[in-house]
Image (cartoon, rainbow, N blue to C red; front, side, top):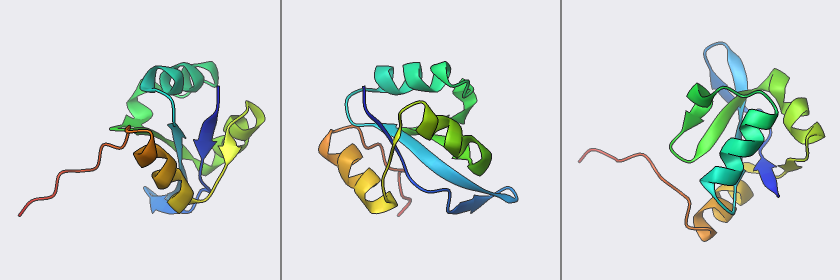
Length: 88
């Protein structure tokens, strides 16, 4: 099982956030998130949003640290990317 996490550089709600993804399946992603105690409500389309204080938990549990661009590339290559729909 390999999960990936980018650095907590995404601002929101007064804190910084990371994205946790799988390049295998959403089932793998959900199982890992549950294992480290991330609530289901943190799942958004194709990733989990993790506040910066949870970053070490994910890495300690085995998530591989990669940059944000590489994270999106791996998610897209796996066919798991679910981008937001843009309005015309």
